[in-house]
Length: 220
Image (cartoon, rainbow, N blue to C red):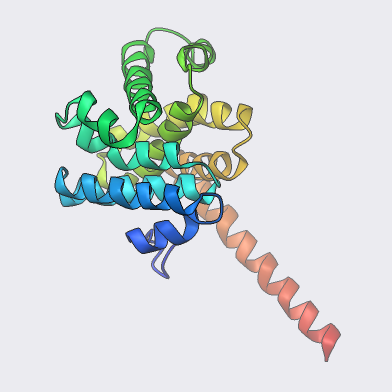
C-alpha cells in the first residue's frame, strides 16, 4: 500500500510493476507482463489502464504469478469487446480462463448479493472458481475500487463497504491474503463508520507520538 501525504493512492507505472513482479517471476514472464500492459494500453481508456495497472500491482505485491498479473492487466480490455481467442493466442489458455472465471464470479455476485446471505455467497464464489487465481484477481480489483471510494456516490459507498465487510474480507481471510484482508477491512470500516475511524486514527497517532517520545528519552 503506497499513499501520498494527502492520503491519495499512487498510480503505478509499468516499470514499477515489472520491478515488483521480478521478485517472483522469470524474465520471460516479465516480458509477457510488459506485453500485456502494452496490449491493454492499446485497447483501453486511460482510466481503465490505470485501474488495471494498480490492480496488477496489488497482485505483484502479493508475489503472485504472471497469469494473475496479466489477467488483471487485460480484464478491462477483454470486457470492452476483445475476443477471447485473441487474448488466448497472445497470452495463453490459462490467462483467458482466469479472466472468464473472474467474469463469472462478477455475474454470480451481482445476481445473488441481495438474495442470499454473504456466507452462502462466499461458498458459491469459492466453489465456482476452478482456478483460485480468478478470486485473487477479483479481490485485487475490489481493493483498487474501494481505495477510490470517493468516486462513488454516498449510497454506492455504503453498499460497497457492506459487501466488502461481509463477503470479500472473509474470502481474503480464508485464502490467507492477510494484507488485502486488512486493507479491505480498514477501508470498509472507514466508509461505514467515519467518526469512529477518525477517533481511532487520532488515538493511534497520539500513542505513536508518545511511544516515540519515550524511546527518544531512553536513548539520550
